[in-house]
Amino acid sequence: EVQLVESGGGTVQAGGSLKLSCEASGFTFDDHAIGWFRQAPRQDREGVSYISIFDGDTYYADSVKGRFTISSDNAKNTVYLQMNSLKPEDTGVYYCAANLPPPRFLPQAMGPFVFGSWGQGTQVTVSS
Image (tube, rainbow, N blue to C red; front, side):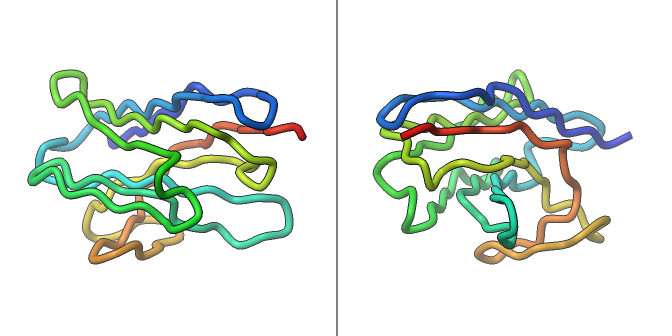
């Protein structure tokens, strides 16, 4: 069974940092890409960052470039999102997702990948 479990969310003041984790299981981690998405209240879900586990390629949305860093620990089947210099507009539920074909639920593209296997999400709240 495919599982993606996010952790590390919380409440921080603007300028603070959080590190999110996404632990994956049930598929061949090294063959896929893992993406981070976020959704604020009353807004569409947006892609934040992804990493191609098989070639290390990464992508960042312009809104987080220079502040967020995505990385992976392949031995632990885990992807991290280090978030620094957080802003109130970074507030939202953060989801990790895998590009497992075929996409399962609510597929959403980011770069060349379509992500359709989702975790349950973790809340990030940045206060001003």
